[in-house]
Amino acid sequence: MSAPRGFASDNYSGIHPEVLARIAAVNAGHAPAYGADEVTARAVGLFREHFGRDVEVFFTFNGTGANVTGLQALLAPYEHVICAESAHVNTDECGAPERFLGSKLVDVATPDGKLTPDLVASVARGWGDQHHVQPRVVSVTQPTELGTRYRVEEIAALAEWAHGRDMYLHMDGSRLANAAAGLGVGLAATSGEAGVDVLSFGGTKNGLLGGEAVVLFRPELAARFPFIRKQAMQLASKMRFTAAQFEALLTDDLWRRNAAHANAMALRLEQAVRDVPGVAVTRPVEANSVFAVVDPAAAEALQEDYAFYVWDDRTGEVRWMTSFDTEPADVDDFAAAIRRVCR
Image 1 (tube, helix red, strand yellow):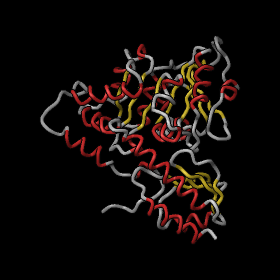
Image 2: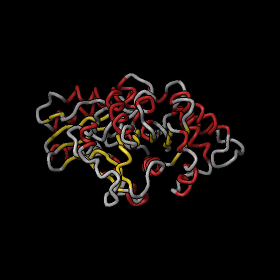
Image 3: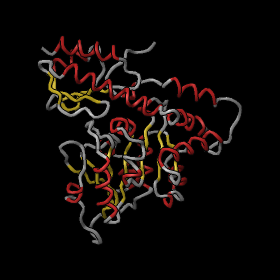
Image 4: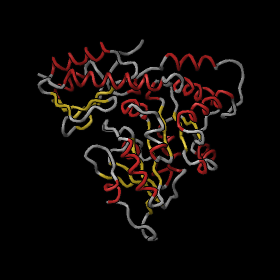
């Protein structure tokens, strides 16, 4: 029995039918394991069509695995990562980057979840001093955990700042498709073409059963990566089933169709509730999330029928997420419920 569609997370959604069909299509006969199969080769070819012919691609099981292994390709244990205070690597990965890499995360408070060169510069110090952990990586989330979106030029400015100091730029792109669809650009425009060195590219939140990819825009980083991935327990034996999902996602712009629909549903929800008494939308809707402050009692009443997260207990801010399979009727019914309890 399926549960009603909620607004807690795009991780709650099912598998897109085109992805499911592709998994079924490759589920015949035997194929070489660990990525030495034709399906994986085709999927990597599609990544190169979207991101550039020289990229190297490595599939992982989940976003934490993609982030940890991607960062490991860039870091020594005595070096650190600069990220926003709200970044997923800092708040929602149970300390995995620090535990498994032995590298420090240095977080920066931001008003909107976005780093700027000035914010990064405020905590980047100690170069060459053996008493200080060394700055090596700037990590951004596109879009951010607060639903805000970096413009291409903002990513490029961070890349220029980092590269000018012999640092790398890493991108957590678990929802990169949503950002690119919202900006009206391709996947590479807001990642590799803007100067990102390593990308964690998300699929699970955009219609896949489960699968992420580490995209290396610097091919010289690839030599060590097979060993990094294996040691991090992120190497799938039946790789073709992960690769097949990305083959579907990157064909006929399924990634954009899914993400654009999710974005449109978030905007529909924001427009439906923006004038409701007792609801204060707190952040611009630039991807597939709506943040709003509502009375805690109203939030509790809504949660009797709809799943969503309270983002900040102190302020009453909640987060409502939409997905590729969110229907207009789902949004309209939820908005009607909000109007009933928030008055």
